[in-house]
Length: 231
Image (cartoon, rainbow, N blue to C red):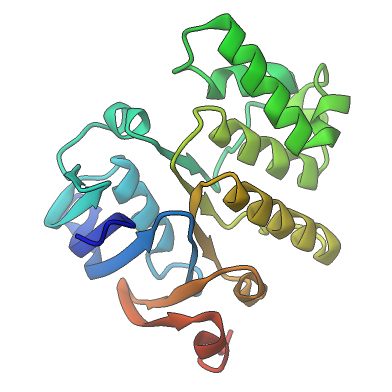
């Protein structure tokens, strides 16, 4: 394995019950790299993230992380080795405050001092959340909720963060703001897998893959993919 390789997904087949959605998906992500998986709704992008996170069982193929085979690991064990997910569905707890949401995200942190330090880091990265820390998450704007979802996923200090369509439903200027935050997170040494329908993601990633009907159709640099994206 390449010394810098962080995630290796090889010939992955998975789905829901007997219905397979992924049909031999292979991709890799190096340390400190931002990689996009682009595709229309329903092509299997979310299924891919759920399988990497351990929410869905692997029927065939393998997942390696930091050189370790994790295909059979439970979700909690994957979190402990440094994998985190910002989901598209229900990314925040609306009846909890911003700070309570973040504390829920930091469930792995045992030390109160470390928890406080990590909270402070999140408030530095997302100053708006600091202003809203005592507000219920359900009262936040769409952009603020997305920022909270990202911050909550970062509370475990992951090596690898997966993001499921963070730009969904946001106004164009907020899309830029959330993608700019992704670059800031990358500078902290976190590798990111960004699942998107919005091809603007190509302005912010190192490289990417195009997915269709549960398979990877092509991969390459952002420039290479720009000419292939037709949605």
